[in-house]
Image (cartoon, rainbow, N blue to C red; front, side, top):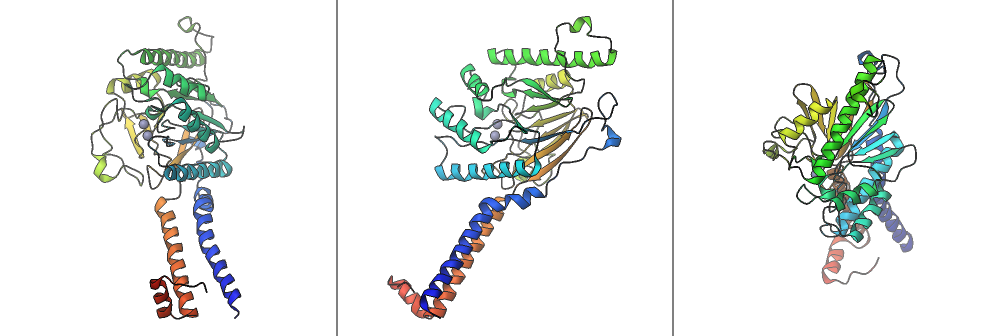
Length: 394
Ligand SMILES: [Zn+2]
Ligand SMILES: [Zn+2]
């Protein structure tokens, strides 16, 4: 066989192995993994109808993810940043394409360094976020605030909060209503209960929203117009809300959490600190009493967990969406009607799988190189040339 054809054949195999592994790990892998996920179906026998008993429209298809932690200019290595952001962008864009959610919620800690970034770095972080999480008009993106976006309570100020709210063009505490479903968004960083100006403003807003929701329920039950005590309140559909926030409600630890994305066994029994890892007991109880949510979705812990508060309020901790925080990131698919909901979890490709594919490709290349040496020159001659650094191109 002529030499040049062997050389071309080796080059082709090299390109095939290296290019194939790269294309698979960086692009293709997201498709089969997310293709396995599907929207859960609402059981019509158990509340699949609207709140007033009439057949409902199709449920809201909501995708929920959390803790993207886009690395900032100070703490992030450029390669780490490039890699994590590429992975999240591909995962998000593939999920949009395959699953077509109507609404996407990100439960805070969007940015890693929003709490201290300069205006220039903040703008750069925001620009990258908009590129990664771009979407068409069929999908609405709703973002909640987390402690890394505006700082923990002691670091938070009006400037950082308003900077965040301006980017996403909405208040951090509000109700988003779609198809008769009320999604209550809570700025949980401001629930310290110490009377700070931001805490006061957020609590005032929560009390107003709680009154509005209660009046909406009473109004729908009485069916005779707005009651006197509800004069001036804004009316929402009469469904109890799905509450979304960054901090989880108070729980002692993750000891009761199970599942493949629960905290590692060594960390599960570590006690949570109130107002740091989870909300305080008081703030948690206030939220439950005010809103009586039928479901709570929260982030912050970076691990998955299911908790039942007071034997009737279920809470799901949504794990981090970033491979920097987990080997197996995931997101939640929620089908929600005014009176019912069903959830499923969609896992993304595992980092260990990707590393395994790259290692296999590397091993393949090594074998090919050895086979090539054996075939062309004999192994000993090849090794001696390599050791002497006088290896000539074959
Ligand atoms: Zn976080
Ligand atoms: Zn957090």
